[in-house]
Length: 298
View (tube, rainbow, N blue to C red):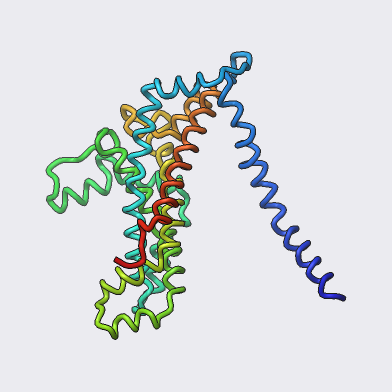
């Protein structure tokens, strides 16, 4: 058998193996995107005859108080990105050392990642109850004098969900950074220590700069996840983003408009606006890194 035939067989086998995943991706990701784009410019709903209305859905969105609130909450939610990335890098540096039981800590940090978001959200919801374990611990330590209504106080509800997102995703990004750390040649760090650099200087001037490709990847994934957050809010606070729209974000609002109000054209327009916001964030991050905003050395 010639080499070219072997290569063809291997290529055919590779295409065969990725075909099921590609079919699912086309059916449930690419096709809905292509189909949904023109819907954003129609009045498509369960009750009206579909007709082209141009930019009216977008004009309606930016004059809709609920959408503006959801957009504001989604942008506030992006605060989780720097928090989760900094913590993930620190955890990766910690578990990358040769310490006793380090494998146990790696597994422990990764357990939330493989936990169902629905199960995690329900567990955190119970913890946040006025008679929940969080209030019990705070009362026992004397940090508070009475129970805090984490689930009904508008000023606390969004932050509470953000904490769930951080807890759930921390191990995922930690593993990516851990893989990045293990690609850094140990000779570089050893040379820096020989030259008199302490641990914090090595991390700041060598480890972090060499991790920048991983930082960019994780930051992009985290930004997209933060703006599109849905599961934890839907489970903990329902499709209306209660209380008083304090947890209403764009993905939850789009779901509400589509599957409660049956205004699919307007929901598609909201989804398109969210996609454009994610695109803008991505372009800014790429432009910032290319212009030297994330430099290797100071």
